[in-house]
Length: 234
Ligand code: ADP
Ligand code: ADP
Figure (cartoon, rainbow, N blue to C red):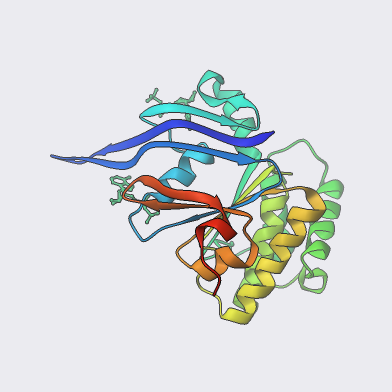
């Protein structure tokens, strides 16, 4: 079954005097449980496509089906629910300075019905999963880049997503830390069945963990398939 299905998706932005076609007639299917890479140079349209997948960008044309729901058909309240099933991690982590590690992981659960105690326990379980139990009461500024990204991953998992989108999440990390984060993502994919969409401009990242890949250029997918098919061996 597909976790994500995009049919003939286009996104056009209108600036003062010109139209920019950021995404042009893209068809994309990502299977549940896949680790799917999207690679391309800056300006290729990757971020715009990701915003379509995480339901923050309404496409100008085409059909979006995420977790078996046709998004255009959803009522606003259903759309908000659907968005919770797609989580993101970013290059610059986007943690809150004023909250502890625990507080950051609990944050997505604040507006929900779950009790304070359950929230606390869930955050602790997630921190254990990413190997940061001892840092619960630490503030993010005291952590290394790799540790910050682990906190961001724990926070992303708090809403029990079906899909995790990694947007250049290792781009600010050194090669060794990059490898440890990619290993963690692979483990989450295997243990939780999480579908991972990994956006990057680095071929090595794709080769390390992705099963399948799409190459984007100027708003289009110009090549796609298994990593072995698309890239030659080193
Ligand atoms: P990538 O993530 O691959 O770097 P983007 O999706 O950010 O690519 O950008 C694709 C194209 O769309 C670029 O030409 C960019 O300038 C343009 N673009 C992206 N977002 C907007 C926006 N909100 N308004 C106008 N143009 C945009
Ligand atoms: P409008 O076209 O009415 O100005 P908005 O772009 O502000 O709409 O989005 C409002 C509605 O668009 C939402 O309630 C939802 O139904 C729909 N919507 C938002 N994001 C998406 C998406 N990614 N795909 C399809 N529909 C969307």
